[in-house]
Length: 345
Image (cartoon, rainbow, N blue to C red; front, top):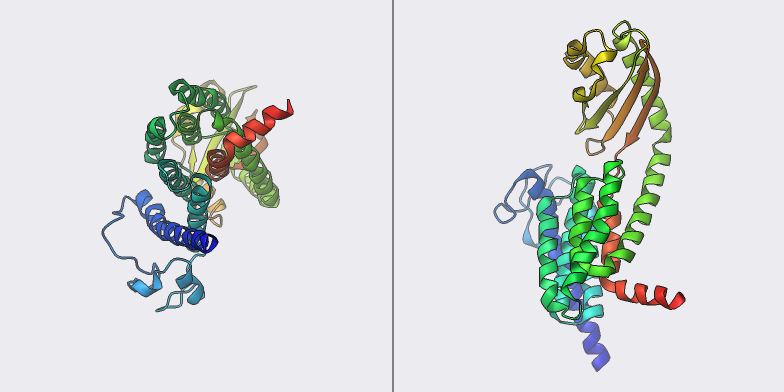
């Protein structure tokens, strides 16, 4: 009987977590668009039909409908179900690790925030400021839920992890949101942030390598096109024996050149370079028109003596999800990982 009771509790915790995951999907979609997460019923994005309550059952409804809208049969992204299932599993993991306690409450809120910021980072390449602030507030809550962790350990955790990540950000390896996420999580987790960071960076690095390998052919083609577009644009516009690097980015399907970092002495008319013509900018935007709008790229065009010598093109990587995996593991098993590591020394 105790085993049956325990199994029932686990199932109920998973179901409750998946229901919270359904709400998280609303937060993920609406908050970047500055929409209310309370008002406005759920509806199909294709036909606009309001979704019936019986089609909003987490996981089950999506599977029953075959991933399609009941009304117009348009495809519904499987990510909604993945978020629901993942939230349910993390709630279950928190229960198995902490039982029903304040520590579990803090953990499930933390995991929910990690899921939200990860999905928003994937979609919009940014980690919401309110998510990191909320995690920092959770850090204050752990003063009471984990009294065995002294207050200074929270501060040490934040500083120890914020410094190296800030250095990585300076060299373009991370974004400012990643630094804020790790600093806030370090304040919450204390020393447990160390294994979290190691795991998160490894996952992020592996993901980055996979993305770069998969983009290799596309990058090669796009770099050649960029060279063809820039070559006639810079010809005859540079001063004698000069060189410069033109930096730009593709964001939300549009191209933008950073005109503030032009080396003015390298150009005969630097103001004209900064105010480039619309036709040229349209050509650059059209070049990446077949790229999904949630993919962002940075390019560097190396020019010397009125000629393009080299072009670099790189896709920006959302590190938030990889870091979130490491942080979730650290929150659950950080102490155990550190203990086993110290036993090996």
